[in-house]
Image 1 (tube, rainbow, N blue to C red):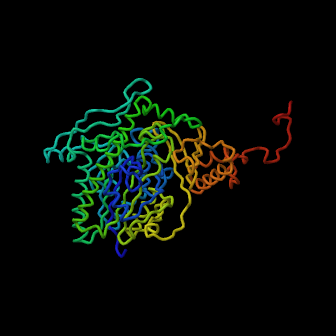
Image 2: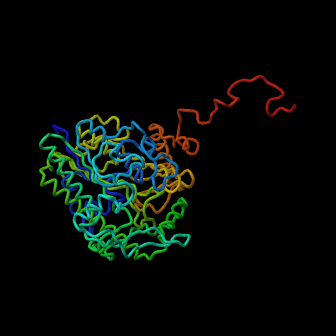
Image 3: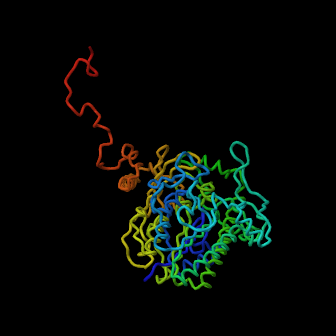
Length: 509
């Protein structure tokens, strides 16, 4: 690529990889994203650094793992962590601005409380929070200008909480046409911004970065009838992990299942919720299609790199759970990852372990900027080129809490997954025979060699990164030789020869 590329970054929220046709769902209605996969690169092992919105999005912005940037929880459920990135923190958007890029973000921000996207160099309306802000003045103006009806819902779906109260809203019918949906509004604003940026790109040779961040398909799934009923629930195959018993698992998982009211609803309601969720993905796919059509109309396709991914996944009934939380299953940690770069080969499929974090270095390299400040990120461009590249054969993810502090670390390899839960039992899954992660084999004697090897590898990665979670592991598990003294023996009086005295401990007067 002879000059910095334009970049279109498409992002969804709480989106399972298996909702796309490109990832094997034969019932999916996702022709636009499937075409992006066909004409670009599909990453089959793309993981989020942490399955919660704000920390994951902060990692994308900074190229740093959550433990390093320290923005560890969503504002809405903050458990005492900081709520904004530190002043002076490196972000790719500010680096792009200095390089001369136009920078825009249309849609979900959710990377801080006091600081907005504008504080980091992005154009676009400030749309804070975790769900579609349907009372936002810009959205209301959009409806008024087009004589579209306001937001209104019916047919709410929710279960019953353990205390007998109504559960969280999971889905509802939206009494608006598709053109009035927040998703259509976001795509419209993105197209308007794209038109302005295209003029600058062509007339002043000014490249652009434009992010379109949908708030969905995060629950509650609130859709017009056309998409609420798009998928027949009879065609939905339930995840095998609805057979979850939580036997041998951390008790917090059973508690989360009760919080999300799974067992208070008929199984057919779960099937309908999954169908509606797929419908939500189809609605977003159509809106992305409108943006891609605008790209073609504006002559931008051959000079614009296009990313598609999500901040994390969603349970939708898997493991008798909804939403996300302190359970490091594939459902919420593995997401879709698609990337099309001008001039790169089409139809590439990669099996390396890559991360949302790696987008940061990739964006910087596409712009001709040194990616080194994105210290936990690695450019994906060698993989997109279709050649061989040296790459780690495992990946580490982390979690710090949601509703309450709950630290976890995870190591995922080709066939196994290790999860360290300091408050509870650890987890080990043999994914080659148990891809649904139903059987925790951490204590199984035949897994001793795998368990020790993975524990030592996880320890080494965390120690080398500077993630102090490794201190807990040093004293609790077989982590091999350590290069420091974890026993505080430097303060132990037995390390030096003191004069004998009748007052020494253990010597009676």
